[in-house]
Image (cartoon, rainbow, N blue to C red; front, side, top):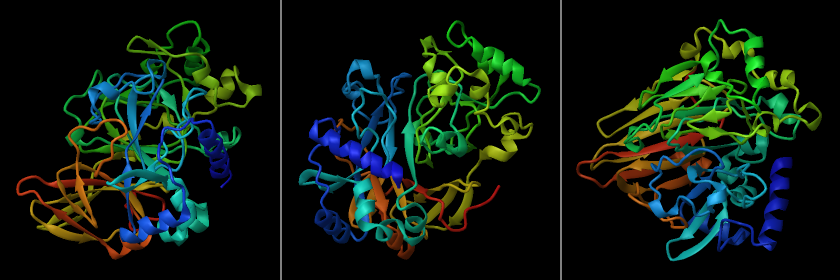
Amino acid sequence: MKSQQELTEVLNKAAEEDNLVGTNIRNEEKLVEETFERNDGIFRMFPSFVPRRFGKAGKRLKLHPDDYFVFGMHRGSITERWFSSTIAAQNGKEAKADEGLSYVSVGFDTDDKFSLKYAVEVLQDKLVGQELWNEYNGWPMYSKFFDNLNPLFHHLHLGFEDAAKVGKLGKPEAYFFPPQLNNHFGESGYTYFGFDPDTDPEEVKERIRKFATDDTRITELSRAYRIELGTGWYTAPGVIHAPASVLTYEPQWNSDVNSVFENTVSGEIYPPEMLDEELPEDQQGNIDAVFDLLDWEKNVDPHYKASNFRPPITETDTDAYKQEWITYGNEYFSAKQLTVYPGQTVTISDGAAYGCIVIQGYGQFGNYKAESPTLLRFGQQSSDEFFVSHDKATTGVEITNNSDVEPLVILKHFGPNCPNVPKV
């Protein structure tokens, strides 16, 4: 609640200063309720593209080639698209205040919109369900595509206790690699997780002590796993990882907090503050404090793959559709992949509110036409992203695949209250 209130204050100030990505924003209670009722408890979302100061765009986000630097060359290229987000990206002092925040499209005849964050505040349990509203007073997760031509640096996301010291939340996350969006693997088709089980803690400390002066070569101490499309992984807070240059669907907790242990990747140099900028000021520069951000036992688990690899698990398989669990085995969030076969109409009940993104095909999703785009301009509306309220998800969404030949494929992300999530 506190972080959401603080973000509201930041957004209000940014609106006065014209420092928002979003335009035609109408955070009006009546408009939210009318849009919700008119569309039977389902929102159509406005695409939220996010630049990063690091990495090179993989150009698999279906964004027009001319639009990858619309935030300015100094901000870096667009390498992410965020879904169902009620938080903003931690993108530095030059960032727009609402980068990463999801907006709801009012209709195709207007560019009017309101934030999903505001819609949750207005509709409360009508949107996210009584359980999530009582526990979090909001929507506690989001998802994204990240899309880098080069591999990401070896980094970790803080655990909840460490993040609380700097007024933030810990960040568990998960990965799924959709074949539909990976026509190439970029520079590196493998991900490093943790450290070799025989690694001595002092070896890690010795590497990061020279972060400002020499290449840490930290992945020499790690383990790499080749990416298998159509599968995924779970990454707990405190586990160091260097993701592959594969477009990745990434459900995660409401946080954007990390510590970077690798200072050069594919010739790109990262500044020393990325190592310790998420520590309290009196601990910055303290290598032991940086090292303590690691969950050491998880990082050197000799059976890491057995605990964290996530092949799909079939939930339902009929002549009309197939639904699989693609993120599971954690207490924070889950995700499913729904495939509706050509020419079929199905009604799917999931038991909890969710956001979703269409990655293949076209058809009907509730009251909306749904289609996976070929190419989007920055600022353009789309018909590929939706947010489904708790009651509508529970009673069921009618989905039609209007193609005679191509499957309609949808990825769905849920909070911690989705029923029947498989354990590991």
